[in-house]
Length: 155
Image 1 (cartoon, rainbow, N blue to C red):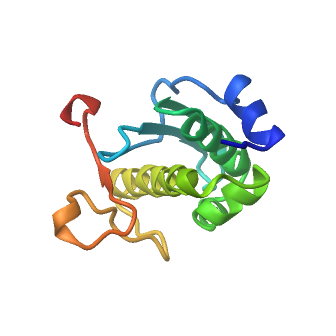
Image 2: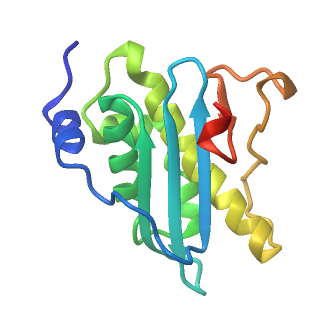
């Protein structure tokens, strides 16, 4: 499988790995098909700017690289700007992914959305354009089989 230099760099030298104690938001997503689990932590200031973003991912190199790039892309951005970071933007920033690894970029996008949903719930606010993440695949047809998990042991 051919990976771009950027994918290999973010896999071998991932940025923003770890947890944020007392984070503003945390979103966990998993793909039951491939076994990837991604947790994204956000520290959001009172103006709605993401001061810090960290991740912990259990998965393949592409899952780690997309988590690293996704957190890099949203740091310093407003909530609305972070919501606009799509899987396509993550893939483009990594100079592409092999077709069989595109689901990793979808997982990164869903992880950002899950964390933002957690933030909105904690703050009692509505984030324009953010829909509740699908917590059960059977709940709605979901093209990339992403489900929200509270505990990675559930997978």
